[in-house]
Image (tube, rainbow, N blue to C red; front, side, top):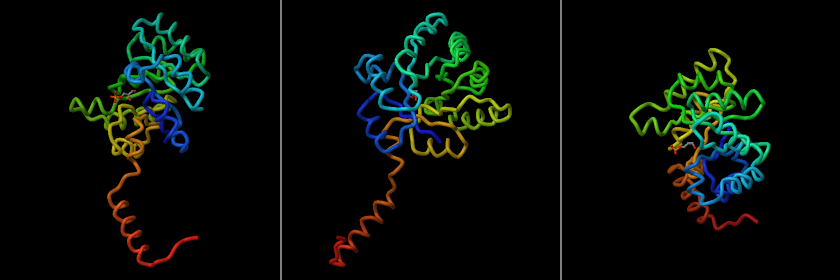
Amino acid sequence: MKFFVDTADVAAIRELNDLGMVDGVTTNPSLILKSGRDIIEVTREICAMVSGPVSAEVVATDARTMISEGLALAKIAPNIAIKVPLTWDGLTACKAFASEGRMVNVTLCFSAAQAILAAKAGASFVSPFVGRLDDNNHDGIQLIEDIRTIYDNYGFKTEILAASIRSVNHITDCARIGADVITAPPAVIKAMANHVLTDRGLEQFLKDWGKTGQKIN
Ligand code: G3P
């Protein structure tokens, strides 16, 4: 399973990247706003730090302008994945980029029907938003399972990039199903290491070790 970090916070990306935990990065207009930085500048810095795909999202809603914006974003670095929304205009732009061999991440996917269109438009990645479906009393993990089944039925090459990840359980559920990638906030990835029994066991080991009076070197 590939881990993408869902943030434009360069320091947070660097911390996980130094641990070898970063296979790519995803950003979106809201994450760029949160970073407080210029999109081109911060995206360029991320692309220089991370060797994997870095998703940068267009903001136009018509295909022609999406294509123009996407080409401008692609100029930032070779590892840019142009991110387009799952609309007919986004699919049109996706097809244009894919036909030129460019990486495309089709985002804001909320149904299996949408995911089929993304695959047929030649998307490199499709981003089903697990958390936002759950937030609206739908079943985000079930969508990942449905897309995995459909893509495998027809040998679609588009990678399932499970997004809007809210918890460690979302990550392990996606891994169980076989999502190709998860993209999660740095805090959720780091939370994967947490377990109360680990903490309790370590505390007991150290307490017992203290009683031995020994030291290692
Ligand atoms: O960046 C795409 C997606 O991961 C956003 O998730 O947390 O805004 O629902 P979220």
